[in-house]
Image 1 (cartoon, rainbow, N blue to C red):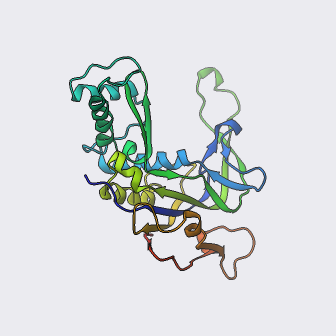
Image 2: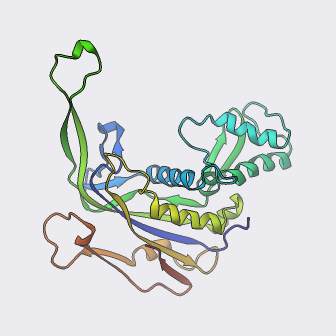
Image 3: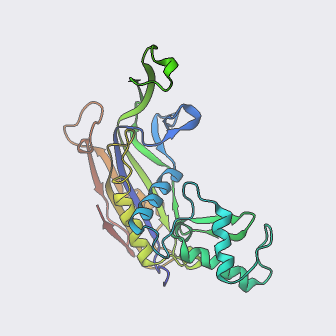
Length: 286
């Protein structure tokens, strides 16, 4: 497939209600937060995981749209498939000596795995398939206002072992954010897309994933998470027509008229967009 010919930036607004958008394992799985400002955080890795999961469901192993980084994946076994495709024998931790063979192996991985084409991958494991820098990058998402994480006590009526049958009910804890509106910024480089073969079809799948990635990610901790707005800035050429930060600054999020007290829904906010500069086109996809 032909790689995309334009540079893009995008802004995704998503929210959470009575859930934990991204727990911190170093802090008892409490919602991630900037300790200086109290703003909630969601890591780029968390968002990429949700995109991967959506693509895996939507494409269900379709050729060219497999997912490289997934649960219980054995990366060396996957890398071996690239060598088998060209009847090559891998040498421990080394790429093939011939440049054309090395390019073939890396190219095969890009052609077969969506997340490698999109995000890149370090495939320098025991079976070495090289390293690829992907065209899509995401920054940490941050909440518009400070959040107030809460700890909720829960109980379990059942016990695990017979010896515990007469014991009191088991107590547990859940961490939630009553409400938070988060903003994520992303970048799509046409120059890097040429290296991996990231195509227009891949790009449409990315937009689809950003809009729908929470719809099949429901759980007790993330029952009410939703993508609310997706703003896509398309540049006329692959190197871009305006700095990304100036485009991001065009999106203004303020409290809606009449909204007072802690925000508890998306209706508590008003979102406006300024005039885009020459050479840039804005598409609001959600």
